[in-house]
Image (cartoon, rainbow, N blue to C red; front, side):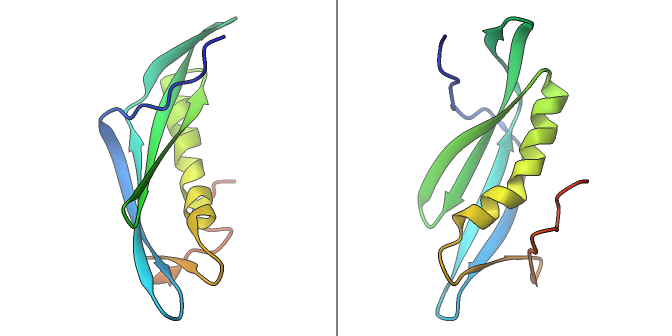
Length: 109
């Protein structure tokens, strides 16, 4: 089975965060790309929503996969706060619109 590619498509949505510590702050941007039909599965083709994480000149690519384009987008959106917090280094906190992103923020029930 082929590995799931992580190439980025055109941006669909983006959100900027600030990672703040006592000494410094840095910008974090998370972009969600347009979903693309992806690898073949037993039930047909899965869809992939690429995600680009940019922080301090470092760029990482990951993705969220779903059974259709809508599910891939939904899962990508749910990943945004998780990815933002996982980018933090020890002693940093994630800020959005001047407020700290708490663990429960932006995570749908």
